[in-house]
Amino acid sequence: MGMQVCRGSLPAKSSLPSPSGLSQSAAAQRYHKAILKEILSGAHARLGDAVAAAQAAYLESGDSAELLGIYHLLGDPALSLR
Image (cartoon, rainbow, N blue to C red; front, side, top):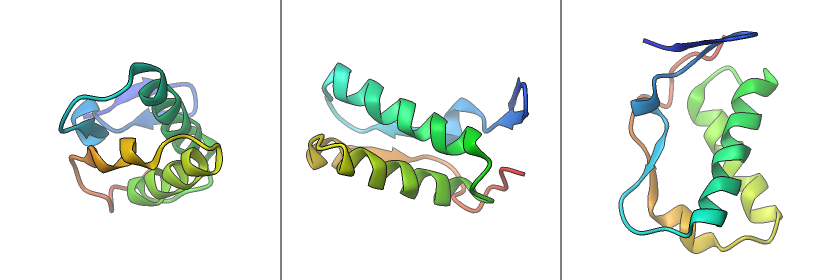
């Protein structure tokens, strides 16, 4: 089940990365924005590819890599985005 968006549908919220511990709110918001940007860009065929690209973009921005250690994709990384 997905949420309808202008250019298609997003994976269900339960399929997006979720924290397994405490995180920094501002850094988490930047990471979530990076994930949505990658998903909505149309550049990735699968959810896992979009999440990996978002992680790389997040790290390139200079944010702490520690945050990525507590966020895990709860869902199928092979989920088609197209």
